[in-house]
Length: 363
Image 1: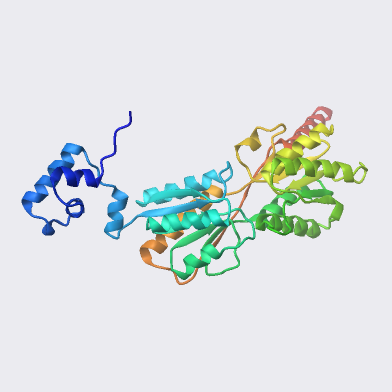
Image 2: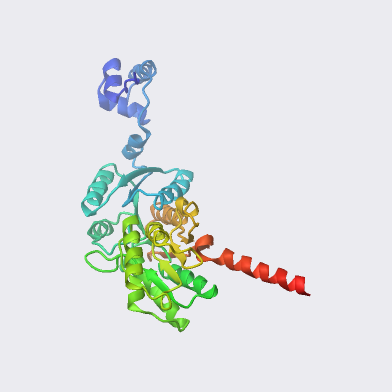
């Protein structure tokens, strides 16, 4: 059986004193307690093996060192942000309370709960939807320290840490262009109301601008809109195959705005008999662990999620310890290209190597 938790009330009863007296002793306010009484309290604490809650004590002293981390999603993509936040905050002597808030009401409840615990500040890791942020406005008005990751808010007075979604779109398309592709479609994610995603809009903007800069065609029938999900990617793949039947006009590559979409799209394309990357090359945004274990392995733009957590935590600690900064920070973190089989880069290198060997044999 689990050990019964000893409370301050148990200690007060054992020592025959008021709860406030026990509190004074555990918090070092000994000038208000006589020596004999203090010794009775200490003896009761020892006999009961009472361990005062360090967090509660820090709140009483006004030295709370706790932070509320609110995640809008629990997934392999979001998990690293918690790791990054905890790495910095633990090293700085803070404890992290975590909550999962899928919508506005969940977030409101999480904020109320954490504020009742008198946390020093908040870090929010949002889905990148362009949704209401009245909860954040309330914190701002109350001068509560907080940092937002991943939402792309237009409010310049809110500290934000963002992955460069526009840069991810540019980098993914430019990589495909470098491999010789000139007809590049996109599965672009949710970009329309009621809740458009900032990441989808920015990654699509990166695709479009890079295509135009390279004088490549931007055709509406090469743009497939779909939810960020396995099912959405699979449906996008089927729609792509249904609407573009002419192999002479069909794109030779697809830039996919989300990793889960990419896995669904991969399934649809393989079921249709396409060879990847020989018939169709793929590049996606987002690189959770499963991307390396698909067949073929999916080339992806790795989002610096863990680093975003670290950066947000450093900004928050600085605010808590040094006071509110004069200007809010807006940090943009670059993505990293992880080349695997789906883009055809390795296949192209193999062909080049075979060509070099043939030249050597004929020399």
